[in-house]
Amino acid sequence: MQYERIERGYMAYVEKGEKMMSTLTRFCAANDILNAQLSGIGAVKSIEIGAYDTEKKEYVRHVLPDVWELVSCQGNVVLKDGLPFIHAHVTLSDHDLNTKGGHLFEATVAAVGEFFLRREDSTALRELNPDVGLPCMCLEKTFQ
Amino acid sequence: MQYERIERGYMAYVEKGEKMMSTLTRFCAANDILNAQLSGIGAVKSIEIGAYDTEKKEYVRHVLPDVWELVSCQGNVVLKDGLPFIHAHVTLSDHDLNTKGGHLFEATVAAVGEFFLRREDSTALRELNPDVGLPCMCLEKTFQ
Amino acid sequence: MQYERIERGYMAYVEKGEKMMSTLTRFCAANDILNAQLSGIGAVKSIEIGAYDTEKKEYVRHVLPDVWELVSCQGNVVLKDGLPFIHAHVTLSDHDLNTKGGHLFEATVAAVGEFFLRREDSTALRELNPDVGLPCMCLEKTFQ
Image (tube, rainbow over all chains, first blue to last red; front, top):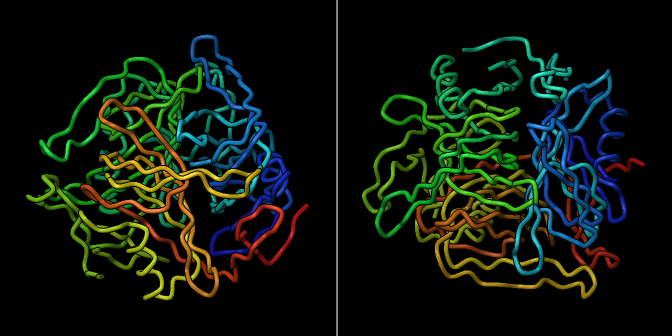
């Protein structure tokens, strides 16, 4: 992975053959990026992706082995169990412009992976919310 | 909704059962967020979504009652009739990774709604453009 | 196109009938925006879009003549051959909420095109990477 410091964050170029989620997560840990906004585009393969079943409170998982355009990656980095954790959702497209989407577990860069990571000075962290069944954001204030 | 101040904006966690558009719009009004960039991910249900018919100059509307992953929400907050107005487009995905997308009118958070709101110091506002048929952005300068 | 200076960038409203990629690229060149993050929404037509074939090392190209909602546009501006070059991926949707996506070559605004351009102070540039077959980002540092 190549990277460069920009205001409040980093441009990150995850290179061909690298796993984007584990590489970006290790990069966050190594650079004390505890809270951040993530966005990016690229082309990926060997994609582990899914959706959250709100009734069973577990993820449905699929694997897409082939190459797909990464037409949108959006997400955030928030501390979970003391370590930076990336929550990312993606939209993918194939050579016929068909799309798939979901919660991203992992993907290997097939051509390029071009990301922006914006660091936030925040106390945000994730803790298990039994009602949702997921580690949910805990933020400072409440608005009703 | 939970929130936390970050540089030039807010992390916003719209909680299960809350309507994302009305909650975020009320939050903007309460915090004098007149112009902003919005982005986020989550899982939503009871989704009112559509597309703009440029010939009839009206929105086509659909309702998706079930739970969908919110794989992308992008948009902006701009003053309209003196109040902050959110213009947001979304991509959704189901348990089989199928996607739908469009202009978002409203959606209820089904699991989590994780957003970034970046405040802008701008004079932008929306005024009806008869040629387009919509309240369109009016910005300071023109480039040709 | 209308625009307004915001912190670290611009709000850009590409108007009906304007070509979004060439207009934004000319705007970047005219304003010395050499590196930036791009995101936006709108409604477009006459869309040249495709996907990168990683084996043939060339783009597959399609043309969508009709009007589609631009539900997501994400990308970046990086110097290529000394000029700002926009790399953008999009998701589109039709009146039935069906989606398509891919690498965007060009599109004409059919109703509105609402973008945020965030300028970066970066030395990033694109140079041909023979292994990938594309002009790839070259950033200052490496992380492994």
